[in-house]
Image (cartoon, rainbow, N blue to C red; front, side, top):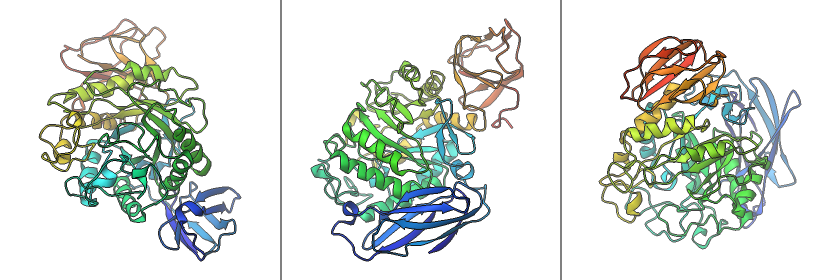
Length: 518
């Protein structure tokens, strides 16, 4: 089988297995080796897609040339070899990882970059239940809204994780949800529902085509969807690892991030097994990390080669706790960090974590060392509650009077999305927390390159910069709408940028005009 593709655009190859085992998902692993004409090699796992059909998805990281592919092993399958020709690329794709290459940790260990070195800052949302509740038209509506606001990632539970959840097997009806594994209610992952993952294919494609990276979590370890007994800590570790392999095979030739553990302590045996398997089979090494429950140390597997990042969760009571991010920033070896679950907007009661609370939370976490990015959440959206009257969810996490569509419009999402728009195109990769170049600001500095200072209540900015580490030009921005309220040349040591105070301000110091201002 021969095919053509542009660099960083996936191509799909199909093979037929002539002697199918009883359970193709558990009983047969197919691997395909791709060899470029220059001698470089990449290996991709194939995935079962029903009947005798297996597919392999491949993306070329190089801009030109020919790849020869062949099936490894002795499985009776046809065709067993072919070529993929790489044709000139297109830089107009809406997703940055298709234009600039898949994400990876930066050399500093503090942030992500694309394959070509372009900085990448996560601006994430938490529609956790989308994969088993949303229709494709729902996802189109959601993705258009989030793309317009500036979001570039969506955190997804890849399957409904509650062993005790019941309801119609249908999307778009009260209590309804689709099923990824028939035996998940018994704590197993062996009976895979191919149609479910075909639907998830379409969901992920919509997100990617709106510039949004799917952040795929295999099976939750904590609360889950309705708090009815999550399968994550129950599933045998080898089954969890096999499912991680399947996710890499099915989704790993498109932009993706793997959240191998979620809402647990990080020490559960499934997490290490899954992380090691992802590292073993993902030739692109897209980022893999852990998202913790609120009462965790947040440092499990810190030194493991498969672990690329750490995410905390600071609880849902409407408190700002940026020191959790700072604690993780100081762990060694260095890994990119962020707060993956601040308080959900309007969760449990109106006004909790609402409006500018979310913007302040985002900028505070970023300046505390969460330089991997920021994440937002809304009550009723993360559960994908169909409408304001749908029962069966925990009231503590719901937004009163809101289904997911209403929650999509909550004010705070505008402010978090704007973080992405403001930072887009800035050289953020090597920023580190800095308190000693200006008085009264939470700050991030890459000397001579970029300084970001966040002032919760605005006011004058006094510079303490005798070493001239801050770049020479400044823009004082209202982070609520992105408007520039002042600009000019940075004053010397002891100089002040005037501001009357009373409103949040973001100070950007750079040698060049920030792209969002242009």
